[in-house]
Image 1 (cartoon, rainbow, N blue to C red):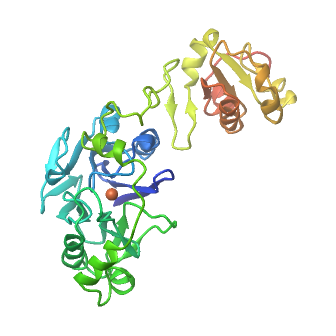
Image 2: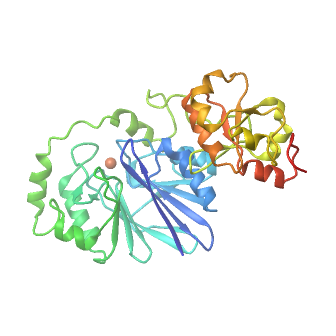
Length: 361
Ligand SMILES: [Fe+2]
């Protein structure tokens, strides 16, 4: 079975695609975004997958790839087209190559035009293709910077993408209107730039008169992407922003919450401040509470957060771990950076036989 997820970066409107083989657990990630590497790594872990490769459809001008960062975090290999002229890749792809993940694979099709090194990845059964910025939903990528060439893009779409089965779903690298997927049949019929009877000359005329603004991040993104996302001296990547907190062995969830394991908390109670966000009657009730915990019911937390001393990291606790997950967001919004949730709350704490104050035996 194929595992498939479409992920979105709202800043650059980029789609990242996770494809995995459920039998082997091997996975690939197409077009990861630097700032979303932590999110993507959390999803891959929660789905029980092992990231084999990050794949680029091309050298992007609007965001920095997460390829290098994911390689540091997960040990994945970096693959992109040889024609992209990037350094730092573990595998350089050519037209016709196959990238295998478990029992599944993607075929590499050279589809130049937006850039020289653009490729489309086609799933083994031709049911899906990842077109990058070659064809977009009812649109196409720009051809007015990097090595853009409208004639090459037209030919790529007509000969390499429209030749796929009509039912093949197409997934682009971007959409700016919230559309998520299209099909070969749809784009053949309805793409205003490339479909129907539109000829090569018509497309060239269309693209020459688009008059688009200079991409905001191009001066920073292209040099970084030519190093597969390894940070350099450009101003755009502030040092340390992608570093994980070090005060405890924390886990970041796909839901966006830092978590600390109960056994670590029990052994390190003196290093943190435990904030219990249940109601007072729960705090003194049968589950008891963690020794030294400060009671601040969730409904009062936003107002009372400024009172909390900032000398130690805070671990938020509740009955089952849900209210306290929300509490971590409230505390971060109040400017407290070192915050984590206790997953499973007092129920799990008690079930694991950890020590409490008060409560029923
Ligand atoms: Fe692009």
